[in-house]
Image 1 (cartoon, rainbow, N blue to C red):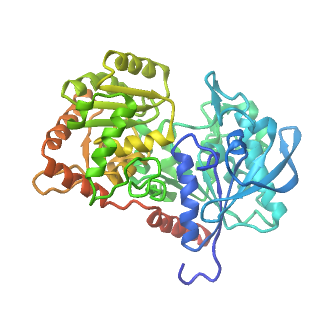
Image 2: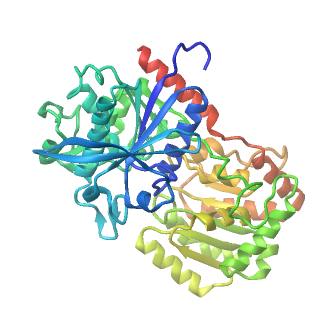
Image 3: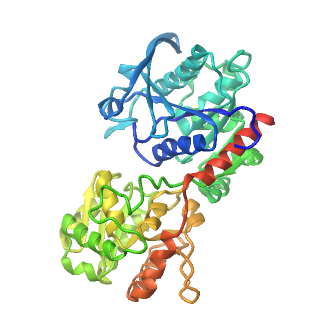
Length: 490
């Protein structure tokens, strides 16, 4: 880390961290970035709740501290802290409170969000700050992720402003998806333990409610999003979802840093979940993975000689499922196969299930999330579909490139930043892109992909272009390290 006299001390605060607890890409980032920052020379630790899924996982978590006394509205709740470690040896502090976190899911049931999510994450964030005080070893920067940790910057600027240990701690707040805003009734401000003066348009107030996401945006020393394009997009009415005004005011403190891919987990030459490891010199093994996948998901053997489109996604409007249901029969009509893995909004699940029953030999649907099957789809598909309405960063297109599975994406957010349209004249580019959020634009890109697939030499060159890309975390980690240093010296 060059000329630093002592390593920066960074605490990552996240509501989910892979592999301890995961619902989506936030966990992947919060699990991989700390290890990468540590490799750059920083002193790193992680804090997250101790969920049931963590308790039931094969993690070595040891009791570290008992006796937390956490204020929550008019009450004070006890709690415990356990400690585990990442693969790089980063300490992971797990905050245990059985009635708040020992539940079947992280945030919600099929009936909707847990009714006490505000109380749950107020407890977690205040417990983390009190634990730092107990440890007596301050950190330089707390890196907060998404609305669940948005109150931390507000606490440090108000409740703990004059605290001898926490008062000088800087904060960085990362917005992974501005669609999740942590909205709660104004009368619940007392639960947060913040002074009433924060409840105004330039503070936590948001259209008659309080927003924990806005708390992070307003009070953090610096802000990041997970791609440069998304940093620009969320400053517009189309993508800002009501937060564009406050983000425009903080534009000098807003940075777009592209997420990275964890190639220890996603690399076809050493992936334990795929039957036939391969690399750019053994592409014939990818064809064997395709044959095995077709057999596993019940598609016709004849699809071996036709393009297989894969989609691994939350089934939601954000992910472009309304476009998908409009075009999936047209894709199959062009001779392609389609395999989809995901779960989400009931209307899309129902439409896709009906389509899969109509044409089971060409369309396979698996509802739910199966991490192992996701790897086999990545290895066996020819094209990965990402027709997102918006996409802050996206990681699956980065994984797909490494697997020689050509991404077909909408030009938005991180998809636009990472995928370069293939040019058949120069043979440059790593995928296919469409712009307008319309079914015919998506089908235009699908037809282009199918046309190039029919030329094996061209297709193999396109695959190798993608496999040569490097979206590893180390470059992004250095940018974060530079940003940590800049907010400390500001």
